[in-house]
Image 1 (cartoon, one colour):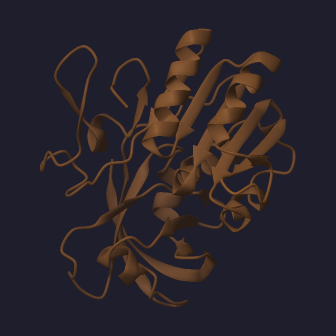
Image 2 (image 1 turned 45 degrees about the vertical axis):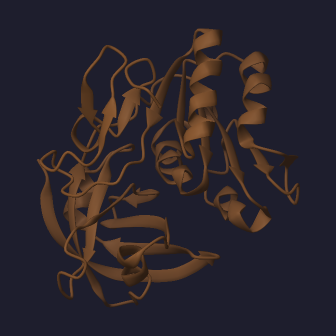
Length: 253
């Protein structure tokens, strides 16, 4: 059941250009939210902007009652969040949406801030059975690599400019990873072209794949219909309610 909780900010810092890390005390939500789900935030100082903004937790520490969110400033809502400082508060609604399947041998493929839910998945899954592929524009954007569990089975990186790891896109590394070992499931989140290519590779290899879709969400509860996506069997799904995590064969990425 979703709940609204006022969270106190315990850490607010820049981690890359226009990218921020926010840690809040949210004991109720920290105990409830699962990898793949999202939280709906707004600053607690007022209703400007009126609508909340959706964020997938990047890491959660239930024993401390803390939730971490890493986000990029892309508009007024996220710009207001970037002004938060330690001791400030935010109004948080959640947990919302569906979850990843974390059993078995996993390959996680992410790019940009889409890496956030995969980081949380890696925190909860068995790291010794988890391989991660992440990509960014340059080395600075791959700060994520320092946040993943140290005992992952593998962590592969790629940058568009070749400043760190593979020179190219993270998805370039997927075929070799799939050929090198068995995976029960692939989880992916990030830019749409990347996710579409991952789903195609998984379909060709006969491997189950789950996608976490990013959409604009007005209400986060299925009422406004702003976040619908097309289902392969026909009709539409609400990303905020039916997703954001879907089996790749269910929806058009």
